[in-house]
Image (tube, rainbow, N blue to C red; front, side, top):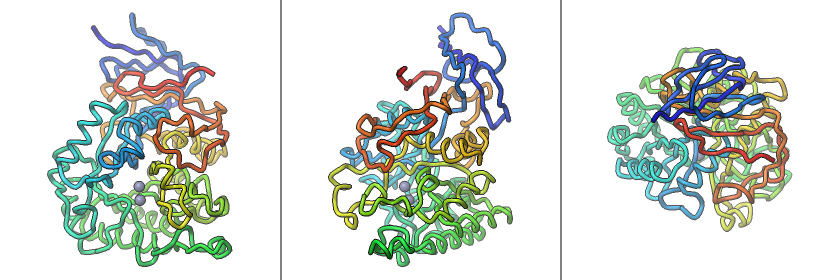
Length: 429
Ligand SMILES: [Zn+2]
Ligand SMILES: [Zn+2]
């Protein structure tokens, strides 16, 4: 018996095909079977998408799932449920777990746990160095064979340029992108927020933009020397965006992502000593934010990624200086992107969908992010106009560290379909 789902009468936005029109999408046995007007599918389950946007399944290439090792903060199951509720059909798991995903045993463990418990696709990212300590290279080739889609020591930079050069040479030979958390730890040491007038006024230690910029510059130079594909995680500063733009002009295989919080908030929005505003990189200036938005619109920035970083209340309730960095973001990403980019008229709906689909798929070489016949049956259905209020106490995530609790948004995911099956659907209000 064939499993068929007909998504009827939605506004299909598929950047890979440059399609933006009212159409039907038919999924069959977990894959896209057809896209077109008034499709016939006798016996298929029908999803009425009238008034809704039907897009390829969203991909979040930067998520911390905390399993194995920190299951009190998040698990592969709870993280994937939060992802589905935010409209994501695929998420990439950063390796800073305990143990660190620096060998194929951990990579396979994550894939196996995801197969059993995740409602979305989960793609592991392997570490660059053993224990992400920045010294010896991790088992890059065997992690790739086990299913890793990229390497990164995210949470930490690779401070030693010689090690990074080696890592890039190795990654290049395996065709893996290198994702760097660009931060010079000597420049950022001890900082809790962006270095500038606000940090001085609050008496908090600053993290200067140049701590990001010098590492972006170094990595671009090393990518040029090695021919590796470099992806800059959570880009946040104006100069870093300019450096990536210049690298692209020169034809280097360099890409970058921006997070929703770095485009929605600046340091001026920071609520003093509220740890839900503490993240790395820190919230920057309004000028930096404007550059990120422009970069997303014009194509310098290739993807939106959440950097979903759950921390339990016990950790985030400490004094500001003691708190860990990072916030959750899977359930609010689409709403923030719609509000900040689309409803302001700065980015078209086609481009916005691209940033969540084709953009990350291209960086990671995933055969996803499009609705062509034969492609995986991953679909995100959303309502760009839906007004709703985010209540983090109702979150699927185990953690609630977010500055967006109680905020009213315009635009929300309505249904998330993975491999032809509806894994999450917004209950009618
Ligand atoms: Zn990071
Ligand atoms: Zn991260």
